[in-house]
Image (cartoon, rainbow, N blue to C red; front, side, top):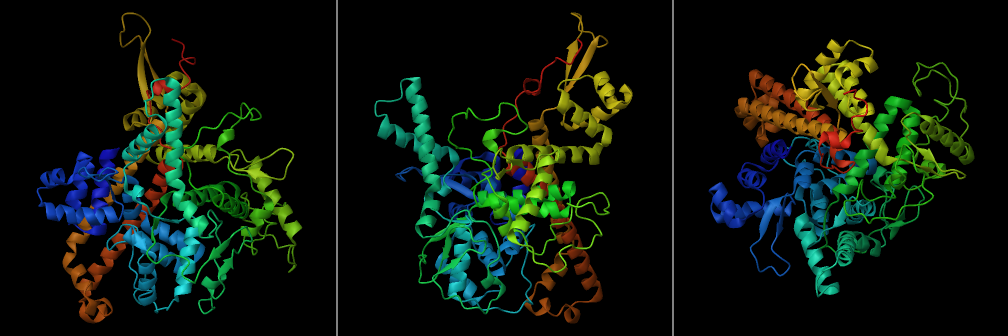
Length: 635
């Protein structure tokens, strides 16, 4: 999987930053951790050129480095895989999402930090004040960027408004103050924390298992303390972290004066936004918190999935519920989470993991974030519909009457009940209370399985997807048993499982019936491993995106002369005057192909987010060690 990811990021970094950085970045993806001199040897470039490239890559957090806490040793560099992918592939999607939720100015601030990787508050204010609409896309030539139109009228933003926009992003956890440890590799960070704990608490060494376990526990505490220090800074600046999202009134009306020292949150939840009077140091360096962005992307994917299953109106309620949860969590999953003791009151057997339930929410909190224009009666009454909730021809029953808060809360609870009774269990209700929870872990697992089955259906047919579904539900089976459960002939099943076996979505093992181990007397047992199938689909996704970028580069190369001419400043706004008809046609065709390929990349990126970012990617063990065993086989 790393091979195709490395190939993808090499093309993406070349498109986004330019060919000057590609040799250094490609060497790090191919050979792993290297020093400056090793990089110079691997790339065949002078030390000065490699150092200049590394400086920009480290500043944008595409490359991590570690030189020791005392900075006496040579620095080692390695690729920051997650941030490299997010900046070069997902930048446009994230900026578009932030703009839709918070407004254009907040989106511009986010894009400014996203472009530079590490930005000072004073630099952001200075650039947006002088050139508010000349802020380019995440990078020229980036895959999924969203360049601002050059014909848009210039809008002057005051320092107060820009600072409030920064506070909005800090308050929601999307931006965080940057620290030196953010540039350290995970291994070095863990080693530094462990060494610090051993020096302070175990000077004589960890000689017993009890000491080693205690050392590991304290190391985890120190790692969490280091990681959460930026959030403590934000709280000290009187900015509420983990807030739910809603566009502020000052964003909708750019002429409104922002003079108060703090602006109250639109949804009425606790906390305020501070701004003006230079509460933020102009030298404060901030960067993007991609973990919080993943939480927002998960909200989008789960709400879309709910819309396909329960309809538009109920899915809007569900989206508001997920936004409430956004304000209460920091990340989709915590790799260094503290191990909690087992709750004796937790249900022993259920469809969800009790520890993975979201924080509780109420219908009143959902109402605060739900659009007042939504007709909550849709999907709850017995009107004539097309069979899908929310697509009816019924006339609204409110007759202009503004629904009161108790009525609105009651309707929202009814929609939550619809989600609770759905077979996919979008929400669960606490017994004896009016609070609801969302089983995020089990929902993401079901969403991943649905994506895998949809991919198998599109590539190999419905019977292949049904066979994979049967194996996932029943464990290890042979062809005859799959045929019995699928109610088809064994020959049809054999033709269906062969291509998905070759593609790597399922595994097979030969089981001899006797000691002679002859082929005629052996049966083939098929198994489905959800983690292995997930990794395989993710690998195919990386490979497909890399091929799309190759095609994009090829199409640009074919029309390089026209593109270079159209990029000139005198031609950009007068294409009809300076370009011949054949050149205009070639330029139009090139833009159509770029848009077509970009849409494909964005769609595959959504699949990658579902497969990789919403739940931890646990390495797959032997397929037959993770299934239910051979109890279904009559060997």
